[in-house]
Each structure stands twice: as structure tokens, then as C-alpha cells.
Image (cartoon, rainbow, N blue to C red; front, side, top):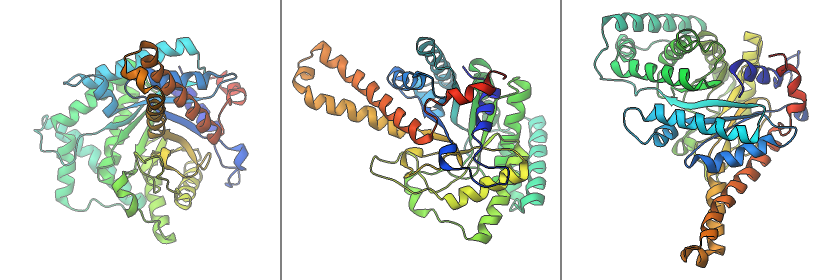
Amino acid sequence: MLHGGQLRDIFSQLDPFTLEGDLKPHDERGSLLAVNANMPLEIGLRGFLPAAAEAPGSPLIVQVSFNAMRRLGGGGPSAIQRGGELFSQQLQALNREYGVSMLAMALDHYRVPTFPSYDRSAGSWYQKQAQGYVEDASEYLEEQAAIPVATPSLRTDMVNYMATRVYQEFKQELCTLVGEIRPAYVMIDTESLPPVLTAAVARETGELLRTIVGQRDILLEVEYGSTGKSPQATGYVPLDQGALDEYTREVCALVRYTRADAISYPIGLVHGASADEKYEPDYQRLFAVQGKLKEDLGRYVPFVQHGGSGARSLMRGLVGKNNLNTTFLIAGAQAISDYVKVHDRAVSGGKKEACAGMFMQATAAIRRELEERLDEAGTRRANTWLEVRLSRA
């Protein structure tokens, strides 16, 4: 299983920009696939892993979301912990069978508490600590990108939020889980938070994971705004040049302040797109922001495409990490549906072989879908040219 430093090394090799800041040719660029595990775990994982293991191998990130962990854990106060541990155990156990050499584990959409929060304060010490984070983030973003904290009352709400018991429990839960399963990558779901609070929460989260938990090389993805839900799709508006320049400054300031390793922001896609629901990503925004990040920070900061199942096309490299979930749910479910139509009488009659066969069909369909997506990303069987630097990691 890859650790964060090795995954960071792979991303650096997929930098789509030349030294002059231009895009490399399409066939010289690649994106990493990040696929989501769902219940029942084995059906998806037995589709993902053999496809990635096919010689000479393909790099793959397998991730689990906050909601999926809660379902896997069966509910209750410890559901996230149990679900995350179950995911980790099964992923590692199955990979001992398949042997994917470039496999990374990730936490996706790890949800922060709802803002504003009216939960009780955890105490005056936490209030003072929260005030420090909010004030520091506010001053930095206002100076670097003219992002103001709108009103004194909003600033107070943000400080109170970070001082609540529910927020402290969120931090403890995340730190405990990361310490137990040691993922290479974690994404904090902050889409509902104001920009300054997003910066403060992401900065604190990164510091906790890298210092207190001791996962110094873990990759942190920061989210700026909502990355897309189906009812919001029609409301997406491309920015004119002036607004795009301002937006680019905001994203760059957020990444610098939070020390993020990856960034996600809306580009006109949606989560949970149906099979016939496709959107063209806003590549003008993507190229402008990613190019400026490389220019300002001097390093490649991968963009994470959420809602990748509904993307009409994939801009290799500009999309550093392509998150896919719905496409595999559809592939598996449709395979089962087609199988039952053909074997209806045997399934209805309770024939053992017929009932077992539907799940094998689902796994095979998921594998075929992953192979197609790896080809699209340009990283199928890419281990030959990625292995050189990894051997020195």
C-alpha cells in the first residue's frame, strides 16, 4: 500500500505543465483514478483490484466516503470508526490476493459539522484557540485575495463553531481513524463553510494530522465551494475574465494558507449523474486556476474532479485526481438487472448457481468499466514509467 510520500511522487510525475507553463501534449499527460468503495465491499473491490493489477499494473486510489463508512459501521456513535476500519481491513486483505503495487487508500468527503452550530462550547481554552485560527485565516485571505469576513457577527459565529463540542468530536474522530488505518490521502468536506472558516478548519486539520497524529506525509485535499449536486447543475455560471482572475487569486491564497496538497472547486459537474446525464467541464476555469497555482507556488497542485462520472470529457493532467463512484454503481446494478432478465426463472426458482452468478456479473462489469476509465485517464499499465522514481521513495 502506498504511503503519502509515494502518492505525492506519482502526482509530481503527472504534472501536465512544461517548464514554460504550457500544457504538454494530450498523450504525454495522465490522471490518477480514485474509485469509491461501497456496500457490499467485495463486489466493487474484486472489480477494481484485478484490473489495476493487470501487468505491468496501473496506479489506483481506492477511497471511502463519510456516508459509506457510516453505513459500513452499522450506525451508532462509533459507526465511522468501525466502517473505516472494515474498509481498510478488507482492502488490504484483498490486495494481498491481487497484488496491486501502486494502490493508495483515501478518505473522501470526510464531513465537517454543519455551520453554524448551536452546540455547547467545549470550554474557554477552545474558544481562545478557535479565535486564533479564525483571525489568522481572516487576515491572510483578506490581505492576499481580498476575501473579507463580512460582519463581526459572522466572525463570532465562526469562532463559536470551532469551539463547540461537536467540532472537537469531529477532530478527535478523524485523528483517531487516520491514526488507525493510515490512509495516504484525506479530503475534508467543507463546501458548506464560508471561505475564511474553510481556511481555518483545513489549516488546523492539516496540522493535527501531520503533527499530533504523526502522519507527516499524508496528502490533504481542500475544497473551495460546492463541487456539485444534481439540482445545482443548471445554476453553474462560467466567469468572465475579471471575475476569473479574482477567483484564481482566492484559490491560490487558500492553497498557500492551508498548505494543501490537492484542491477541488466547482467546474460545472455534479455528483450522482445518471448514465445519460453528461456535462462539459469548465476547462477555461480549470486551466486558469491550475496554471496560476503552478506559477505562484512553484509546484503542481492536483485538481480533484468530483462528479467525474458525469463528465463528458477528461482533461488529462489538468484533472490530477478523477473521482468516480456513480459509474461503478450503475455498471454493477445494470449487470445484475440484465442477468436477472435472462435468468429470471432460475433466480425465482431459487437455483443456487443462478443466484450466485449475478454478483459475479456485477464484479466483471465493474472491472470492465475501470479498465475503460484507466484508458481514458492515460494511466492504464503506467507502472513501467512510474516505477523508476517510486523505487527511490
